[in-house]
Image (cartoon, rainbow, N blue to C red; front, side, top):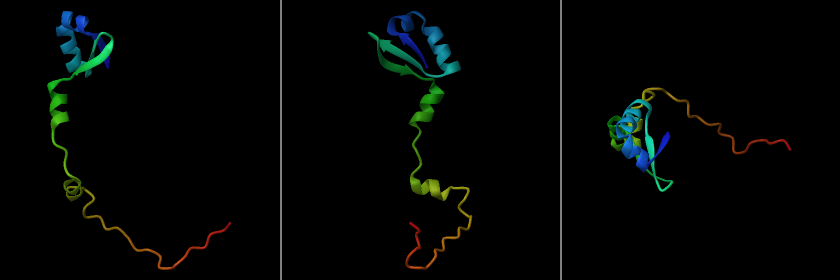
Length: 82
């Protein structure tokens, strides 16, 4: 992510916007401190899109129909060597 001072970003706004679209987010600083990040509308739309709930994620999983072997060994203890 390229960093711009506010003064440079104002003076070269067209370039900052073009770089945002072509290369990704651009950081703008105020008095040397990171203050804002400029993102493209496509990235903004992706970021504000609601995330699916865990239940919806499981329901739409491509692995939904896969059979799993969940059987366990029925012994009460395991032997461990020290």
